Image (cartoon, rainbow, N blue to C red; front, side, top):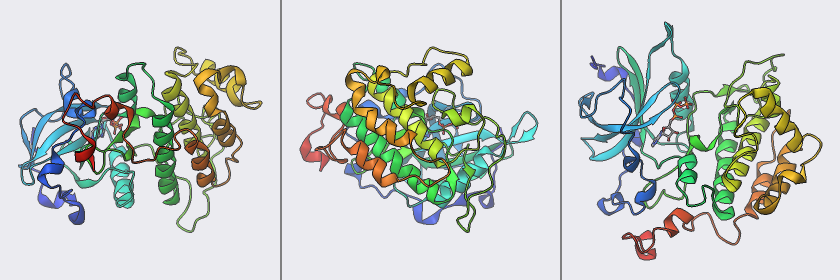
Length: 355
Ligand SMILES: Nc1ncnc2c1ncn2[C@@H]1O[C@H](COP(=O)(O)OP(=O)(O)OP(=O)(O)O)[C@@H](O)[C@H]1O
């Protein structure tokens, strides 16, 4: 394929061109959640070739992610000697110009400097694809959960994941956008010592502006198209209401349940209407205690707080964070996670080199 995108086609973010890692920081200690250990071996990449040097600078090492629209490659920036992720989508989809990644890179650039978004090193297009070059991250939280011994995460990990997701959404909502696809597969961690406890929210391809530049909310449409993932969307989204910050938080709420208990009650349901029915049973007339037995009981207050939030108002993020903090206190956001604890003794990990 032709990849002679001119330098002008690249929108580079000069201040962010490198993570400026010292060599010892590049030797990451937690190999369990490194994406290069999880290269998708049995899938043929469609847009870039393994071992090719994309735009003469990024050596393509493998495919690490595949979504409905794009592909994510692990690559090495040969100038900086650093690993990066390259997200690629075809410029045209069903004959139409694909706008998803154009919007995604726009929002990502706006959000640079915020702690819970990936660093962007560049973006642009060739004659066939749009691409974004970004910070390489861990495998996603859904995969971390899957690879954990009980196929679920501890209260302490879930509390810290949810706390950071609420912070990420607070930053995004402040810029005037809703995410509309919050789920474990769109959450990763950093992979270097200084970033490995920082949760990063991904995939800004479905964002929508809900607030204008002057801070006023846009007039909601009488009926909005469905956007999101059935398992995680709010009851309002099933009913085709315009999405607001509240709806992102409902997805956070379902995410917390799934991570903590292993699965949502509607995991095996295929029909959207059946999923909706169970969601209604779970929260519509107050939080249903039947679905919050055992380890899930710690989520009751959080579910109440989210469900009682007025969708037409800005959520009280601080109150939500305070409520979820109960799950992980007295630990802090910078303490090791369970997947690191499991590694102690089997790797070169030690408290000493984690400081
Ligand atoms: N910077 C990154 N570093 C490591 N892995 C990544 C990175 N970005 C994405 N991934 C992986 O690739 C997967 C798909 O990424 P993303 O959701 O951005 O793609 P998408 O094509 O928009 O997906 P979908 O169609 O499902 O919304 C993620 O779940 C994650 O596991």
